[in-house]
Image (cartoon, rainbow, N blue to C red; front, side):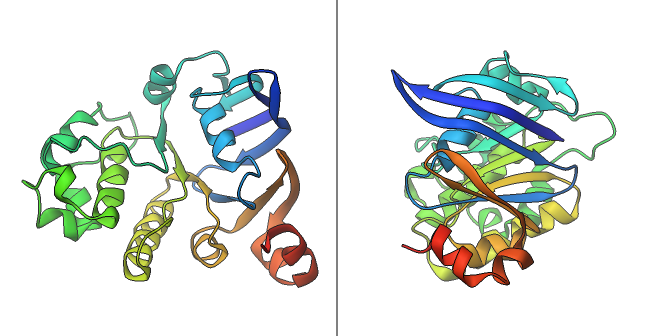
Length: 233
């Protein structure tokens, strides 16, 4: 579904990413792990062409999309859920969802309001509530639901559990697991190793803007010394 090769990213003259390469298979959830400042969020922003200047190659379903702008990448099928959510606080839940609506993709069941409310029952109970009146966890669910209204083929998720209560984190993890089970491809940027392990089968670990490990979660769990060296604070 997604192939990234030789990805470098720069803020001004400072190089943040160095020769990043990763692959997300169709229907797979891949975790992008690492300490704060490792380059995880920058990698997602570089893929979606937001923020840093980048070089390298990004391919979606075999098609080279490296030179497309953000709105073109969204139309091509990449959905992005940023860490800071970016909902429209003056709009209701229903209005936020309508903003994200895009046509269905051939061969894929379209996301409807009814399907989303089944996935996020909390949102169904507050469909007329304004975004600014919602909790952080409710806003995170709304951001994810709004992105799904765009009928993406690939979902980029940036730290969806950050700052949320454990109960809400569990609900979001279950929802994302359901999305994977339904065939959506997911690239999950996450610091919570437990949450990432519930959702994903494989992981890439970043350090100082480079991929330093790629493999299964089982391989990472079976080597605690390596895991701690790469991920512990």
